[in-house]
Structures are given as structure tokens and as C-alpha cells.
Length: 300
Image 1 (cartoon, rainbow, N blue to C red):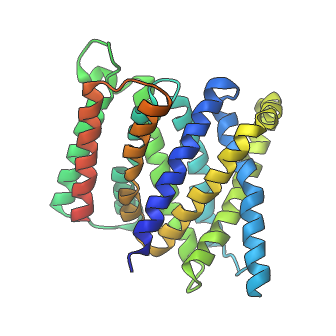
Image 2: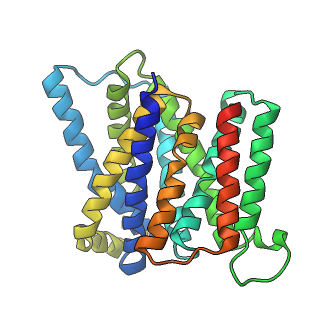
């Protein structure tokens, strides 16, 4: 019954490693768009190989994919591309742990998107949790060493990128769950694999066309960075499959809430791997965000 919890934790672990690798790529050789493209282009072969191997061994065939499936998948796929670009760009503005924390406002925003798009109702307790999360974002929005009132920092680039990625990841999660549910009563892992395979192919094509028109040289740099980028692809495959599997089993807001374990992992990565300093203000902000997420889990 609770397998989705363990799958969500696995997804958070894979995703932390993948963002660490993307931060390295963005700092060394690739633009945010290039680092994002590397995620899709190097994961697509592994994902498709796994899917078709499963189809061959099981004797099954691809299920029919309705127009509604493609609408949900397209919204989810495009939102994820834009969200990932925002996160990678954010890493150039703030440290790794705070960048991931801004991204993690997606949990609160997924609940809001569920309310607006799917009509999911929320209790007063859930709204209280959202207000706690908002206070955490206000604390984190102030760049260390900067001056001025808190509201003046909501318009800085780091805040805009972080909050924007949260909104986009929220739409992505709801879109993927919607697409997976269009596949009916198939096994949840199979639904996840089919949805993931179709979405990643679409995302790779989207970004290939975009970079081909805007920055053809970045495609070459993605290939030149393949020794690191291929690991981005492999960790992306593991994380994406686990997210899609969890979305097939449980409400997206619950899945994203459990995925907040990524915050602790990113904090360890920020201090131990990237040797970055975490300020007391940032620790307080991240702590408040964790509290808001736990409260949200208890009230959804």
C-alpha cells in the first residue's frame, strides 16, 4: 500500500544527484538550456531501451494513446523543460541547497494547481501550511549581504527563477499524473514507463529544435560534455521513472511532499560536495519550509 512512499524517496535521491551534476555542467561548460538538454538527450536511449525490453519480455504492446493523454503529456513536458532551465539558471545566483529549496515551493504550488485545475478542495489547515511556506520563501528571497525591506527582494532574479520553477514543476506533476491516468487499469509501473518514454522523446525533440534555431553550438558542447552528461541522463532516467511511478500510484501533492527529503540531501551536498556556506537566515528559511510541508502532508 505504501510503496509510493519508498518510490518517492528513491526519486528524490536520484534527482539530488542529477541536479548536482547539472550544476557542475552549468558552471563549467554548458548554458542552462544546454544542461537541461543533456538531461533529456542522454536519458532517452536508456528509457526507450528499458521500455522496449519490457514489452519484448512481457509480450505486451504499447497501449492506445488518446488526444487527452498527449495534451496532459505536452503540458507536463514543456513545463518541466522550462522549470529545469529556471533551476539550473538559479544555481548561478544562489548556493545549491537554497536553489533546491526555492524549487521545492512546487509542493505548495502543486496543491494550488490541483485546486485550480482539478478542483481539489483543501482544509483551513492546508491553507495555514501554505502561509508558513510563504513566510519561508520571504526569508529565503533576501540575498545574503543585501539591504532593504523584504518585499524589495521578491523581484530579484533568484526569487523569480525559484518561484517560477516551483509553479512550472507543479504543472508538470499534475500533467504527468493526468497523462498516466489516461492509460486505464494497466500496471502502475508500466503506465509510468510508457508515459515517461513518450514525454522524454517529445522533450528531446523540443529542445533539439530550440537549440538548433537559437544556439546550434550548444548542441556540440552537450556532446563534448558527454562524460559527465551521460551520468545526468542515467540519474535522470532513474529519478523520472520513480516520479512517474509514484504519480501513477498517488496524488501528486502527496508524492511531492514526501520528496522533500531532497532538501536534506541537497543541504548535505551543498556543504560536503560544493563546499558552500549556509547562512543562519537560510537555515531558518529552509526549516520553516520543511515545517510547512509536513503540515501540508497532515492536512491534505
